[in-house]
Length: 94
Image 1 (tube, rainbow, N blue to C red):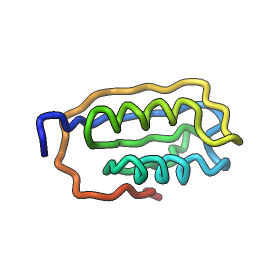
Image 2: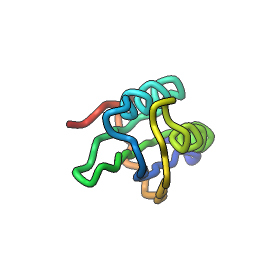
Image 3: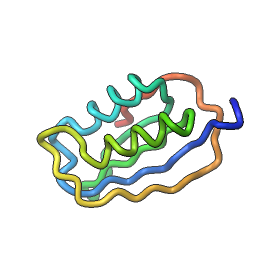
């Protein structure tokens, strides 16, 4: 884990379930070489934790604020947390 490695906890609100949002997040994270996970919450929000280089994490956050065409993002909460040295790969949690 390099010194430029960061980890973000993200909660996205709006019309983000039932619109392939988690798959969108996974594809973007994999394209950017990031590790972590994404899952639906009972509240209707989507939660994610993502780890990698700061520029990649910030690029993913920018993409998550828009989401796939069918989504309607109304709010994104970001918390910066301690990196965990998560092994590679990004997955959808159920």
